[in-house]
Image (cartoon, rainbow, N blue to C red; front, side, top):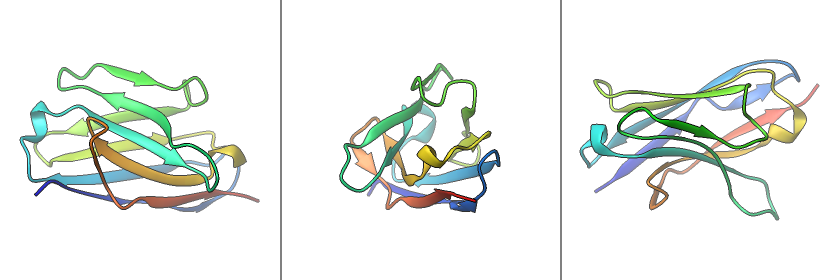
Length: 112
């Protein structure tokens, strides 16, 4: 019943910006802790950012100061604003509900 659908990925040059969206359904969105993960082939899935129902946020060291997670409860949508992108940010980005439910992912490629 829980459904998470990411969008907004694509190809961007180093130093550029991208905004990812995650449309959620099947649960009481405003009560959920929402997270963004990313994964590169051959590597473990990495937690990138978290936002709680109280709007508390947390970021990995690698993205702190560059990425911003936000949510719009009226739209049941979570966002990840990514600025100053680096090649090492290249990954499939996944939206998750409390690290238990997952979307299908959206590819982000940072390359010149």
